[in-house]
Structure formats: structure tokens, C-alpha cells
Length: 180
Image (cartoon, rainbow, N blue to C red; front, side, top):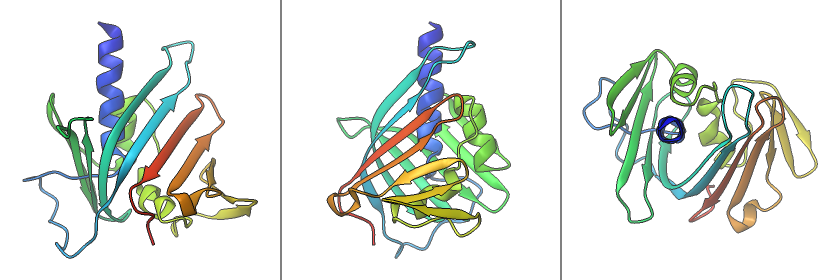
């Protein structure tokens, strides 16, 4: 039963990864905004308090760190979770219902037990550092917010983000069409 709760929380986190929610309090995005889609694999290493966690899902993402939407989909295309964020508000919609948070960090902390830099994700998937935080260029990518963003296979649609500090987290993304 405890593992089921961890999986639901991980789903919520992945869902938080980028965002969408019909009918939440954040203003809708401009419908002309393009969607980035693909598949993601998220792994969180074990800690003394909990077992390792992992999940895989298809996703659709649009927007920026300021305002965006994320949908997580099952292999059959069923919507698993949706998130939408805007200034001062992040909303997560899943099978457990709607939950509102003051920020994306708070949303990811509650959903997974780890505050992940979800606001940076749209920029990272586009192959660039998030403009709101310092970054350092490294061979094949950049370091930002304690994460190494590996762009070595970006031309093939692959982006990887890893955080080594405990618990170690790995996010691997395969874009359907590489983001511009």
C-alpha cells in the first residue's frame, strides 16, 4: 500500500513537471502557444526514509516558468494528471482531486517529497538555461540549480537532467519533435 502512495505522489510530481488544468484559477494560455510533447522517465534514488521511485509517461507541455501547462498521459493515452501554473499559483489535478499550491516548488515538494525546478523545465527542454538563475556551460550542456543538463543528443530529441545531491534524481526526456 505504501508503494502505491509513493507512485501516486511520483505521478503528481511528474504531472507538476509542466502543467495543464482545465477550469483552474490561473488564466488560460494563448491558444497559439505550441505544445512540446514526448515521453519522460523520472527516477528518484532511495533515501533512508523511502524506497526508490520511478515512473514513465507521455507528456504534453506548453508555456514557460511564469505560466504553463503540463499533461501526463498513460501508454494508452489516458490523462493521468494535469497541472497549470501562473504567478503565485500552481494547481495539480489528478485522480485524487484538485490541489492548489503557492508555487511549482511547493507543488513538487508535496507531490514527490522533493522540490524540483519545474519552472526551468520548459527552457531546459528547449536546450537552453532558464533565464531566472545562473548557469555554467559544460561539455555537452550546462549546469543550473544543482542539475546537469545533458544536451549531447538533443538533435535526436533526447534531453537528460540529473541531480547528484541526495536523493539523486534523473529525468530523461524523448521529444517527439525537438523543441526550437
